[in-house]
Length: 437
Image 1 (spheres, rainbow, N blue to C red):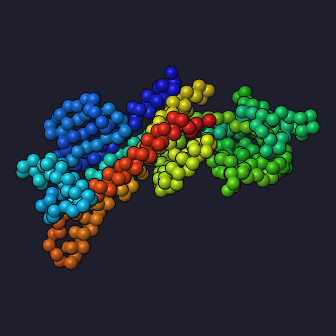
Image 2 (spheres, helix red, strand yellow; image 1 turned 180 degrees about the vertical axis):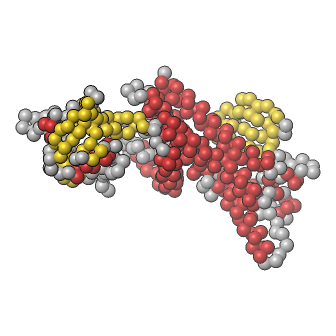
Image 3 (cartoon, rainbow, N blue to C red; image 1 turned 90 degrees about the vertical axis):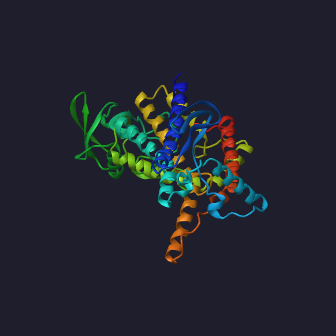
């Protein structure tokens, strides 16, 4: 049941993200006077539609995207001074101009999209991706600030009985000749909350963990809260080889993926996990870093697709860094919702974070400078605006609009390629999925 709920939430948020993305295009277009004839969520056969004013609003069968139909997306033949088309490329462009011109009613040429100034075109085209960015930030704020995320707390959850090797498998039992762990020797118990270490007040687990590592084998005072009372203890850490961790508590690995270790002070205690609300700054920092990581993924997308195909053909399992499609993200949502041993709040925050990452991916991907993506229209608008500025500086009369219909054949090619990659990801997410754990 939890898996179904998770997938359902994913589908609802995905459709909502698509719908709001298109709203980001439609609202400024209408504001600038462009007639919007259709607003559709999905592709394929229409399941439901209703016309209000001059716009038909509807939902289609395939929830793989959406669109708003802006009249006059491409300039007319007269506007660009088009000649008789020669060759396939020009014929496709001419057909696109003709189809676009057929949507312009008599006396409405001034309401065509191609008539907008460059700044207004940019606002219309960027409105969709920016809406996805806003959705992602809102979801992260709810997850990090409203609910909180699991972090290591200052309460002791486990006390090691002995000292085992750093590379020993998890759950390795103590042997008779293994030395007693310093925490057990000092009398620390699960449930103790560390108040101070070596006379310094403890406010977080990374802080006390760093002090333990830096103290070496020096005997230090330790104060814990036990059953509402403060208890003073004395501990003497031992110097042992242990994994290196960063400021967030993540284990550091080298270029080959091996865990980096060094000799540090070792006490033998493990922290409890607590749900703590984070600051707005932390949520925004996560949004910024995740956006940059998404940019890096998108830039290396061809290589990642090739690696994915190679891994699948060779029969290997996909790792956690593999790219996934909507089916994969939906699977993640279901797995997160089905984690029975995890508190509901933590699952909710994880689900919201996953959906936020999906919207960040939509934000970055739609900004690719390729038609038919929004980034392709942005580049076309900037090119036209640049030509006009150059002509103005040279004292020339107003130039003709750029023939953006010439990009339509390229848009068809990109659409086929991206569609093929999308179908490939759907197939691989089913037959060779990435699993969270």
